[in-house]
Image (cartoon, rainbow, N blue to C red; front, side, top):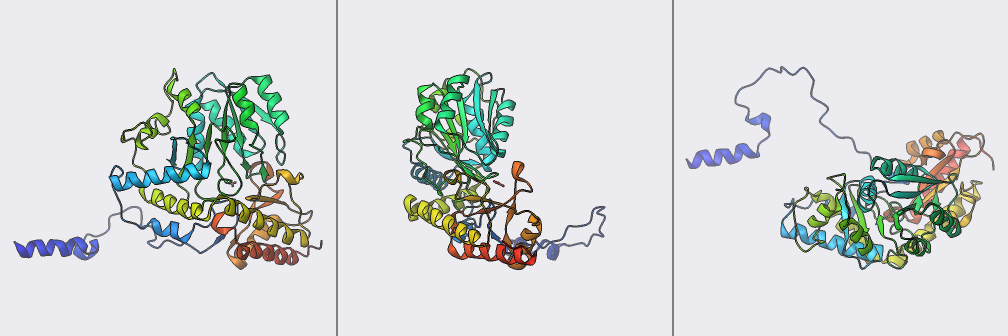
Length: 409
Ligand code: GLV
């Protein structure tokens, strides 16, 4: 008996092929895929994901916990606390949405507004266009406030549009990473609040990189991503809604049309209403990792973080300017420090330069997206990567890549 128990223990720890008692001839019609995963070491200086902080990556190897186990619920509470600091809010309603920044975008659109209500969308790049599509799918009346990529909205333009269209919601993207623009958010909340409208803001590439103050700026709903200025891997996305937005959610006449993004149910998993109910299995390892990344981010502190991003943005443009490269965004006040768009000069092959940087330095220099495809390169200066070593390498790669193409300024 004892021998059988011991043998079973050994067998359980052995590789399956070493314990096969009978050999089977392969009858598989589809051959086995390659067993080895190839993960090269890369410096990710595109629009994201950026390189994760090593401590955030290491946190993913912590032991698995149950998704309702008290030590895991405590980690969720800690994420909520860190997010209150990062979003600068007193709201009870902070959490990480299980999924990408897109999932958080969907949660932001699907919960507060109801079918038939109107949303005005700042549409000056790919994210505004995506929100128009999402809002339409949830039965909202969509008014796209269109502007060419590379331009942003003034407070006067936003006020006039809100007064004209009388929407129940206004969506703005603080950092439009397809165009490299930074939208002013401060001052918009006063306009929306005075006009019975909810302000919904995307900070996927900006949270931690540039100033953001949810309560002081009267932002009702805001979401972000882990994989940009917060230095976590993608998969768990910061989210916040204020009391005003919560009241609207609770007074809905219709059911939220998505189960997965229903914030009444997700909030119950995050303890927003006192109890704790199972909605879905949170991505446990991703939450460990986000919690660790948030701890590192908060340890540095908001002002030093913003200052570091600004300093690296200036260092980047000093270097790029010296080799004759120009920003795609004309108005200096609208340039986004976190994701920079660089005009590809006449006669230069943009993809060839990106390929050069990857081949020589394992360095990612991204191309354009949506309206900027073929027109720009995009350089992310975010979180762990916002460091002189990386920024100087980017400038060197541009210099050598342009020289290789015979470009002269
Ligand atoms: C993704 O966030 C991108 O800007 O490409």
